[in-house]
Figure 1 (cartoon, rainbow, N blue to C red):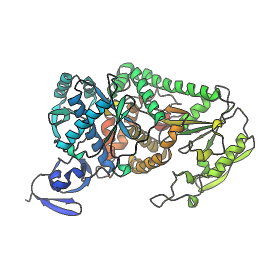
Figure 2 (spheres, helix red, strand yellow):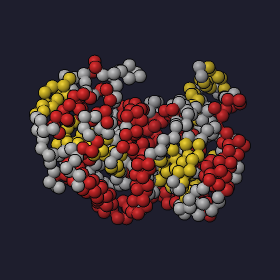
Figure 3 (cartoon, rainbow, N blue to C red):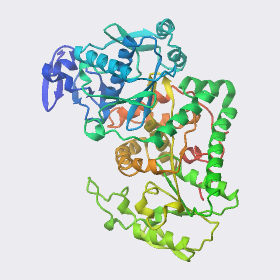
Figure 4 (cartoon, rainbow, N blue to C red):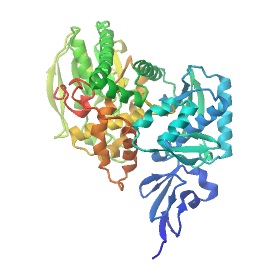
Length: 549
């Protein structure tokens, strides 16, 4: 019986008769060009030894599936450098503006130019030395003792919620850490990064697949930055900044207090927002609401409408979906199909004319898009008075081209998104984007009959549209509404895990599904019967009182 197996790599078949490390299949001069590999559709570190027939695809920093490994490894290296030059500094990472990681410290010590220079020099030296990253398996008890010795108590709390009985530490030139992700084989694989002083911390920029493996140009975003800071302050105030503390809320206080506390925070923001609009009601005639996919725009628009009604106003919602052009008139995207996400998919001139006429007091017959016919038909006839502000919501709602006929002082712009500031531990933040993807997977299944595979398949195009049309408009917002509900992942876990685990391991979307499964499993289950019917959460899990509004 032969022990020979075949490896297909870059179109060539290699016959092997013993376990072979992926790294050994690569020309030594080219090894640091690669980050990680796909082996029979499973993501494997380059130190992985293959011993069976396999198709292998080596991934670079241009590949979406490799960037998470690159970013995790970079966080490890920066933490290692900090440990060497600032050994008593308790650092923390979070995701921040300009697609970057934000490095701060728990002692609120402001980073200086001298700190930055020393840190860059140490990182560069670590990368230059190309130290190997060696996986070491510890039991949970061994990991706990190590964390206790180091005073890393934030890493201890989450251990009891991990389903695994072991921890995969990585050792690098005497430094030991666990970053909840796969790693490059050695530090020399991290070829590019930028560090920049920002506020009291340091922004860490890294290559992105959507910029073809380049580091995105830095774009300051003070409004977004303030929103993230406010989110962090509130999370720290009510102890929801860590997965373990969220789980403890659900376990000890129970779902009723936890859910109501989070919902009350939304109520407080809605009250603040309603008063801002009411206090300028003589000027404001148009309320524009925009945000990325699965932000909760529809429920939020309805709740804001009700909030304004309680103040004596009678807002009227207009759906931008009714202004879609026929498919034949919509510009084509890169794939040759109609680009439904682009601004030009909407009849901009008609939107502007209808909004202007309504605000001027004219009676207007609005269009209604018939999706079965694929064209607009005649809709409702509308006339509004001075205490009836118009509300529009959609991905382009903050784009001034869409509402150029309306004076700026008559418009109130609102950006909505779940601005999560939740960490597994201080050195492992949870992605804001992953939270929205989980929301969308659940919603698409509940209301559109779409599988998790179908939702994940379309996600890259959704993200492209967001980068192109949404994020730049956030800085023009008059108010940013944080639609995060810290309890939501305890509930989403129950809905999302069964959908994600159905994805077979030969699916091209298995890698993404597996990553989402791993982070969702850190949260405990929580029943949803106490979630209010007007909650943004109901937009995704069902049971919303606004469902037919």
